[in-house]
Amino acid sequence: MTRKERFNSIVEWFSENRPVAESELHFKNPFQLLVAVILSAQCTDKRVNMVTPPLFERFPTPESLAAASFDDVFPYVKSVSYPNSKATHLIGMAQKLIADFGGEVPSDIDALMSLPGVGRKTANVIASIVYDKPVIAVDTHVFRVAHRLGLSDGKTPLDVEKDLEKHIPVDKRAISHHWLILHGRYTCTARSPKCQECSLTQWCRFYAQENLVIQK
Image (cartoon, rainbow, N blue to C red; front, side, top):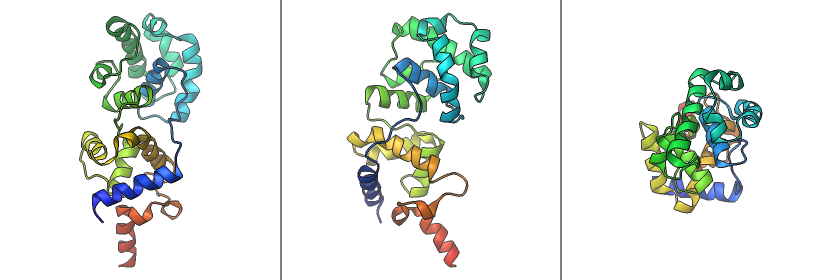
């Protein structure tokens, strides 16, 4: 099976069986999504969704967050991973958002990456969800699933991103991020992947290799 055939088959399966796939983060506007994605780094969406309601109530706008001190923000985010750095990043992000972008979340990837706490993955998530840009954010789930399925052998998230964007049609890129991340979160888990429940095994390189080992 060629890589192109594998891509086509997997995208077709998801298109038919998972026509709706979206972020599990709760947000009402681009600013809230940006805050939530920054908080979600190495942290579960479930935890972030517990933290953000009181945080958004206290700091509903970039202006209110930009005017806050570390001691103002920290109590709201102390239960997420790396709370010290994330509290600092949130304040810095809001201040730069006001100073450089008039309080509006930019659509450009490089502009987004100029904000404190925003790396390429976060920028791609925002650009994809808010502005429907044809980019694919690669987090640990997407990285793992892409390798297991045989969609990429990239050594870095950027390498994997390039492989995915090369082979996935433009109109499917935004939803493909959600397909892969949700598949990695609930089926193709890091430990004990649920291969017996997976519908992608006929195209999965990892499954084929594991079964070959078992047969030997």
